Amino acid sequence: MSIFSYIKIKELKQLISIKYKKINLSTIKQGSNNSNYLVTLNNKKFVFTIFEKTNFNIIKIYFKILKLLFNNKIRIPRKNNFLRKKFFLKKPIILCDFIKNKNIININKYYCFKIGLSLFNIHKQSKSIFYLIFNNKIKKIKKYILFFKKKINIKKYFFIYKEYKFYNKNINLNISKGFCHCDLFIDNILFLNCKINGLIDFYSSGIESFLFDIFTIISCWCVNGKINFKKMKYFFLGYKNKFINNKNLCFYYLKFNTFFFWIERLFKRKLNILNPKKIEKKYYYFLKNSNKIKKILIKLL
Image (cartoon, rainbow, N blue to C red; front, top):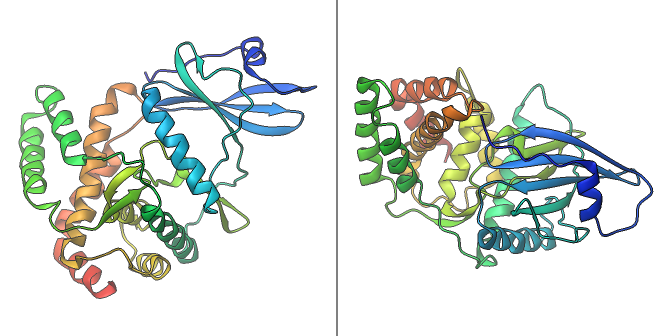
């Protein structure tokens, strides 16, 4: 199971520094890296987060990044200074504004356009963000593969290792890099009244290839059984393709992105919160239809 830190309302009251008449506390959801609670103070909602694994020095850098993004009008949760302490149970904590949102049932092409526009605005901040945290996905994959060498089917292991060797040789050549979110799945993009009301969970962000962010969204939002080229077209119309400098490597990054999250889910499977089967199926779909997808990608770009 994933780690989850429990806090009682009595303990939370001791952490809050502002005056309030009424306080409520409820859990939001169980994650793999932090514990999240919905806190209501005087009828205003906040999100209280306990970071389970992240080093406090890294957290401080993220706080600076979040402040800079907020000041540049990127819709993200605003960090508040309503806590007396920086730690609970020796773990870093933060209190942020709650962003209203509604679950989307149908992801249409217009949502994809708006996501493309939002991602473009994030990538534009690269010149301003000098708190550099470099993400090296290839190194992470190597660590994951070494971990489950003797824990998965030998045939699957050799297939994964062969794919890793290919990406290790080809993936980081002549690619534009800058500030990226690195975890733009559906849960981290909040919609309200058909508009993007906020982006959350920047704690995986850092310096990475822009293509990694782009194809996280393509893989997550534009592929359901098979790839939806109309949604993909509208995403690229929103994104404006300003940060894509090597069109020939785009398909490899689409595959690599899916490969990375598949391997990460295999690694985190022991936590019982991430199922690798769905994303594994997607990866084999990309392999099977590689020529067709590659041609259309180049045409769209």
